[in-house]
Length: 205
Image 1: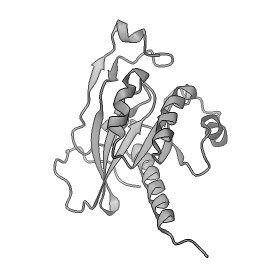
Image 2 (image 1 turned 45 degrees about the vertical axis):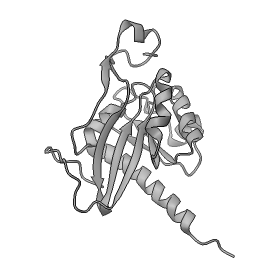
Image 3 (image 1 turned 60 degrees about the horizontal axis):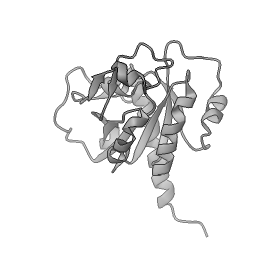
Image 4 (image 1 turned 90 degrees about the vertical axis):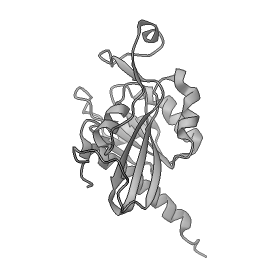
């Protein structure tokens, strides 16, 4: 397991940096994307958050997240260095349908996506999963462990609820905890490496 970033933020890339990878952190409104980037970023994260207004409450579904008071309106950004010279540039997407026009621009050039899911409202993730699949991006799914999230679902039930393919990684993480979030990112990175190795392997005759 990679260790969490130190409390002193880095500014410059480490000398060991070899592979620079753009990753999307995506998921529905209020699922913890900003929190995850905050927890792992080795630089001061960039946020474009605004307070929710009465007008936005009329169009944004707050069911299950009534305590939420801010929302990302453009992009979150952070960076984390992993072992073997891999550096991830993390781009967090807005979760609401009204920001859909931004999604393609933010996703441009990404090699993969970590899709955060809230098991209290699994159906809220369907639209985002559809966007990721339409884009052709490889992805992993991470269930963010909210304190009041139901614990009785089995991994097979959750996988079936999201209609995930057998090869799609699915993990549980706590977006507030750096090491837990890094483990979710590592699951995605390993998935990308495995896909690359499979594509590069010679076909058997």
